[in-house]
Image (cartoon, rainbow, N blue to C red; front, side, top):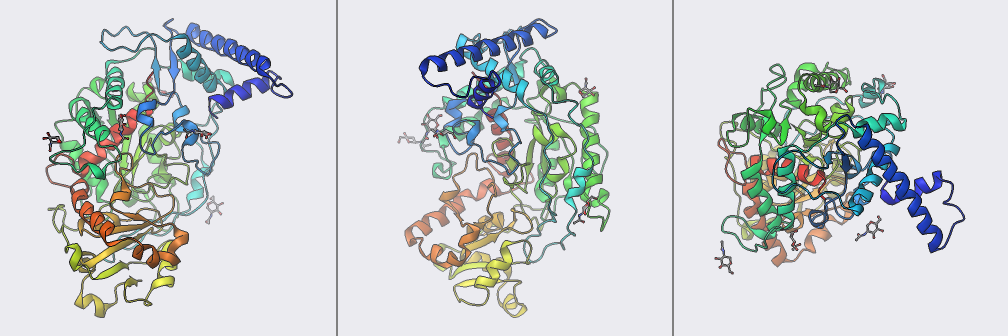
Length: 569
Ligand SMILES: *[C@@H]1O[C@H](CO)[C@@H](O)[C@H](O)[C@H]1NC(C)=O
Ligand SMILES: *[C@@H]1O[C@H](CO)[C@@H](O)[C@H](O)[C@H]1NC(C)=O
Ligand SMILES: *[C@@H]1O[C@H](CO)[C@@H](O)[C@H](O)[C@H]1NC(C)=O
Ligand SMILES: *[C@@H]1O[C@H](CO)[C@@H](O)[C@H](O)[C@H]1NC(C)=O
Ligand SMILES: *[C@@H]1O[C@H](CO)[C@@H](O)[C@H](O)[C@H]1NC(C)=O
């Protein structure tokens, strides 16, 4: 429900929505709404223990919103998850705005009449918003495995079992219990002000159209990315919880197809630039667990149940929120996790605040399931690391002129898309090298990797889940990725312009795949292929992180989305 929706709801509660027409009546209704909402604001401020006015803002910031597909228009324009009762992310109170005792410059201006009117509408929204725990779609999510030389798939799990236990149930959906939510923090901390300031500066980013290191056409809005990245480097501080036992926490796995979470964990835990020991200085809080370790150590083979993993995460977060004041300040909205196993999103479901507020950097970035929310969560690039000692090895491919194969795919028949792809194109067409598994006689002459180095387009269909390590593989081999995975939120789509270096094909268009690829002119192909090479550095792990590499891009998207989520007036 948006602000207009609330007006309607209030109007209908007052019994004057039906049968009324004409400007006079409309003004009267708006007046009544204004009085009611202002009264609600007054009630909240007086009932706050400190006596300070504490208004919650939830207004998207126009300048940042105007770019990209993140946060555009209003909260109503967010991709709608299938669960219509999941509240839109921007309509959630995250940060209080109000007179601050903190002696920091650039404090927000005191609320104007309009601002407090908007604020009181938002407040009313909070009053009206139910706290129902949405049921989740029932389906079984086994993990994707990457190229042909990948670990064997795990059995499908019974994801519905998660719903059998509902912890953190809403105590009540009454307006009073929601009013309590309004009161939590009462003043802005210095770190909040720094974020607000950063958000303003990004919105006012100076126009830049060239750069000696970065290639601007790869970005949706290069000026914004550049400014945001610079501010991240100068401002951002992250606190890494030391809580949690090994190997479930603090123990990265650096090889295989889930290695992205491991590399991020390793590099974050070693990091000196962003990590702070004093959590009071932190803008973001990292939950350093490994979704792969949870799967290895807590999943009961053949049980088809995610419950032990979900219970672990629920208890982990509850212990952190009981022991420290940080979680409760934002109800987890400034906390983040980085998890690449396919099950990672589903295993957050037993803790409402973890599920609904925390920034989730996950490989399984499926916008259709009601868990991953674009703009809040981060699509974590899945990387298949074969040599953990040198994660940046085996990069490069043939120049465009030496790529003789039009399109290539070989892999296991996981999920809904691949059987259709192979059924349509397998063994039919010399230009379309689409295989279920690379036949031994062909593999002997030309390896999987050599196929990717020698093809114009590398087809990256979803597996059991939307994500696939092939996309980054294609980028490393300088092959233009062709992504077939409806609802997949592409990595770093907050900042990158994927149309500059990839082709996204709808699942229904698989029969037209060749026609679509042939329809891309030679010149455009050459540009895309050059762009893939220029993009490479953003998708590579290094033993020691380098500027703009994959580690920094992931951290940047988490930082950027946190800024997107905080309200600024
Ligand atoms: C914003 O969203 C509303 C409702 O979805 C729509 O009617 C309106 O055209 C959108 N405005 C813009 C500028 O996209
Ligand atoms: C999954 O688990 C639930 C609850 O235990 C059960 O009712 C349901 O039949 C199971 N579904 C499958 C497909 O096994
Ligand atoms: C990029 O963002 C800046 C700052 O919000 C804005 O002024 C500029 O118009 C945007 N540029 C493009 C090309 O959208
Ligand atoms: C960017 O372009 C301007 C003018 O076109 C030029 O003066 C400047 O040196 C260029 N900067 C870089 C980093 O290439
Ligand atoms: C945070 O909130 C939870 C649930 O409301 C509560 O159990 C916990 O004690 C709180 N933590 C702190 C540090 O006050």
